Image 1 (cartoon, rainbow, N blue to C red):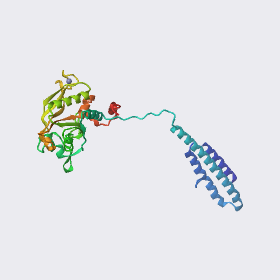
Image 2 (cartoon, rainbow, N blue to C red):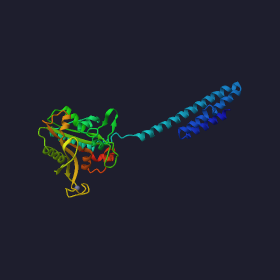
Image 3 (cartoon, rainbow, N blue to C red):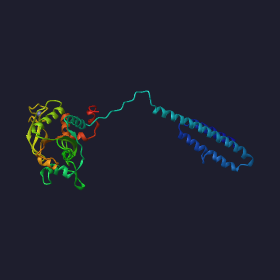
Image 4 (cartoon, rainbow, N blue to C red):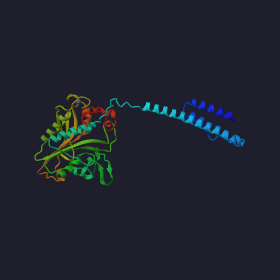
Length: 344
Ligand SMILES: [Zn+2]
């Protein structure tokens, strides 16, 4: 019985040394030491042996078993060490290399423009007001001289919310709140996000930005309005602009105007952007309707004022030459990174 055990030991040790990974090593272990392995078989066979031989074979069996276990453990340690080494090599980090640098974010182009305009109006004595995006029907329409049966309501496709609320369709609603809070003389602007139930295409979005402005004082005239608008547009476009007023109808102003600027692309000689007219329609404005002042708690026999609405999103598109409004809300970094660094 000696020889088979010694032979078994020799061949197992050879295979342990030859194993090239833990799986192969485990296969050798199961074959030699497992419950159905060769050594187990030998110890079962021992039962048939005469008592005097059992002790000697048993001793040898234990010695072989121990030797194989040690050899397997040693080989496994080698594999573990090699695995650790290759893992360390793969994950090795050179801490002496310079850091890749943090990439600074930047403000959205509309936000940059909004902040510029806020700074400008601040310097002209205007307060910057904020208002809720979910508004009452009264503040968004009725208080601006747009009763339920007014056609202007149909022109603004509205997202209605339960309980008589809506997503504000213009920042004019903040004017109403401002008149209720501030006493005349007052100057205020209200920039913010507004919502229309529009079908989205290259020039229409359901969500965009406006900036509403209002000045109430004694004897405010169209000349004051023209002055402020010209100052505003010269600052935005960073050059002298020529403006003109055309009559326009808006329920909350009387008289109302459309303010046009002379086309900045062609200088007034006519091009596709201005549809060959030399002028680009930019913002609605006018002297505040006395009825709107009265609804705002201001006596129109003593005070009057002007108001204007500026499409911030549209203005940003004109300033930066953006040809599709959908880029602005796309969240696409390839687009947004072009405006980095200007304002942070
Ligand atoms: Zn033009």
